Image (tube, rainbow, N blue to C red; front, side, top):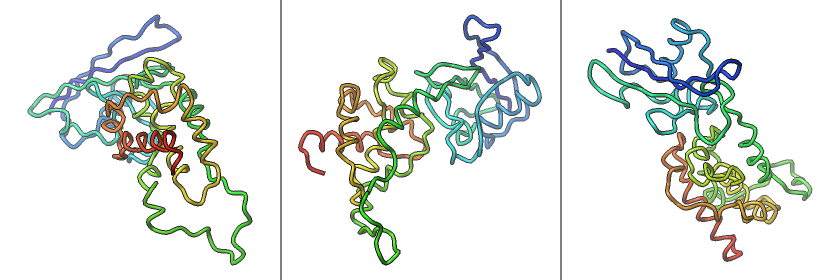
Length: 239
């Protein structure tokens, strides 16, 4: 199998704007991942190609990029999903809405600032249980936020969102997902602080419910549902 790989390139040291690099890879396999192909380009053809990756197994979320027009993790996207036959065309770009540092690497700081703004950590000032055990919780209470614990902060959801493209001040789906995880945790004592953030002008009400975020999530989190549940709490005051 042959793969014709088209990669959006940009080097701030010499480029005024981005350009497309085109690479032909012979002897590719339908079970190769897009990350495998990018490695071949970097290791065999052009060592200047820059990309971000870590675990390469869909756990760290570092290699999120735009593949054939849709956000995905390069390590989890196989050639077989992108085409059939003896020749497959694949186009790879950096995720949208964040400044491109070089090639496929974007500046994640604005994204992480939104994430940190929702206080994504457990808050409970009560003394720890005297028996030395954890703060216990029923299975039903855990189930309320279990789905949103799966986020790996890849930014695929946020950078697929038209509201985020339109205004980078929008806190974004990923931040709301992580706020949801603690707002609905019966052991946490600071839901009102997070609700104040996500209920702001650039919070959940910027969501237009177009499901781009849910479709982009590599962990299959029901993001649009989580956002709707946060909206419900803000509207009714009931958790």
